[in-house]
Image (cartoon, rainbow, N blue to C red; front, top):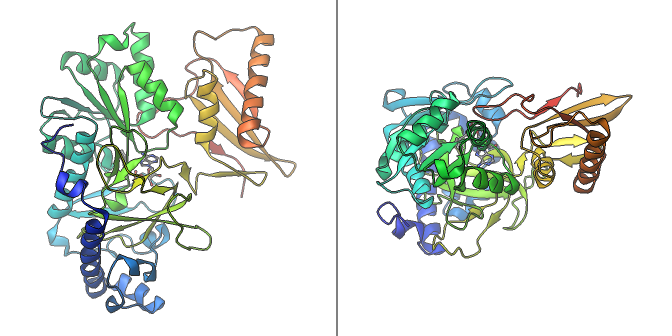
Length: 434
Ligand code: DLL
């Protein structure tokens, strides 16, 4: 492990000590937003809670939730927790519906965020000897800027190449000896596919690790990327509202992401009843940012479906671990009453040897939901033999029925027909007017 950026004192602190730090910061943060942000004060008054009621993290449940709707309501300045003159940057989400979320940062917020991203790079084995190629988008999206800041802090030679221009990516990886690649998992798959087409094998590239996130991806996709790029693939999680990548990160166990608990308090709730659920239960992930100045999120409902675990980790970190999110409550599809996550479909496809290039088309015909799964064949399996295609489709349909409990129709399509993504993949088209 890269000792120089491993913040051992805090990352392996006893749970009680972390709780104490969180409590102190929470008490201050609640007082600060109550005094300075009228939007929060009003929400707290509506719930009948004052800063005096919050004495430790055990009182967190008394505070009101904050949702995406609140962020839209308060757009753009209504949740600002610091004077605008103290803010140094904004980032914004690529939201497809409604207003974008605009998040503000003071220099303190940026330092804190860089620190979180640096912990993630260090946990993936990054040291000043590494060359870190950042192929997340730069700009309003937080991916590029976040890992760029983290990479600087670790002291890696940073290549801020941004997303796209796949041949140039591969050229830089080879010519500059990049050892760590940061991008979305779907773009990592695309890079691997392009490399193969260029006749390159994993042995022809110096990469040893990848830090992939910004979208849900399955364990099967992880193994596929690890094999095709010849690397260890680590997950990283975050969201614009909370800063960006680095809210949580994977360690050498590659089995869930440690939440940077000195800055973020995680809870899991039942999305319908809003009741707090115990560790080990799947539900909606809620975060409280106890340190942020400009955009101080308190009990923010992420809509990500997740689970927390406090099992001892062999890496020594004591920060709580969150599971790989299954998806979002808002991209969970309800098909004929059954909850379906795209990641479940991805698992079946990859297990059957298909690439993670698929598109789910949902429709409603004669009042019944239909699910069409369009999947690319690999060049090796590509054929125009109708009988063979039909039998492959049938096999996949059976696998999907077993996984999901509902019938899906599979259409196998030729290699390279489904659009590739340089950022977050778009995998669902829902034509139902509901
Ligand atoms: O995606 C920040 C980020 C950039 C994270 C680069 C990791 C790497 P947003 O665009 O605001 O921020 O989207 C946040 O993306 O609520 C999740 O639904 C999803 N998401 C992010 N990381 C993961 C992950 C960035 N590792 C939303 N696994 C979040 C699953 C993820 N979903």
